[in-house]
Length: 220
Image (tube, rainbow, N blue to C red; front, side):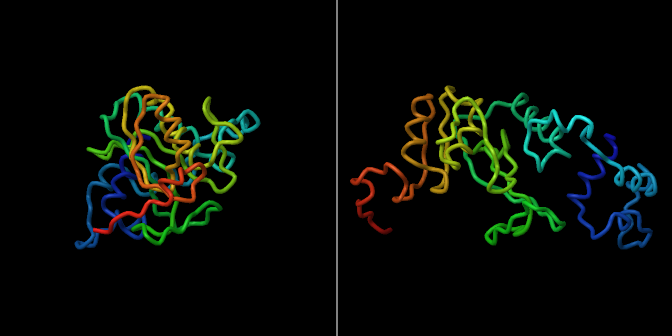
């Protein structure tokens, strides 16, 4: 399985239209490493039956319903990303898009991203290195976020930030974000948890002070 996962990662670096093209003997496409590592027929069988969840335990499943098939992998990666490294002082939150052209109920279209169509994730990264420390897969408007700080009244974008930051609160970090996430209520909460907040702000956000809302900024 380690060999299969390594080959899958390699296809992300050397991108081709089909799996069989990696085994082509055409001198323009020839990549002997694949054939020397694992026969094509064996790889195709493993890919066809690759499975990450125990279907008999679906009634006990606690995660997002749309991610049931791969949730153990997502949990493992998320846990490992946080255990193995502690980010520096400055961290940032934004969304990313992983290219996906297949059929998927929560596939997103983001015209400003390089991929444009794919699976959207909310990510917390270290500003200096870009290291992804925590992430959430967006599964649609019904996406549920639960932790000790999020309640039914919590704004959805605020809940995303708090969930990503949960295990870093109280450590003195400074989180950078754009106006999609930022709000006065979120800033107050983060400050109460010894976490600074920097970012742009939409004037129509709830509880924005009139002095800030009506301030005329100079253009540069």
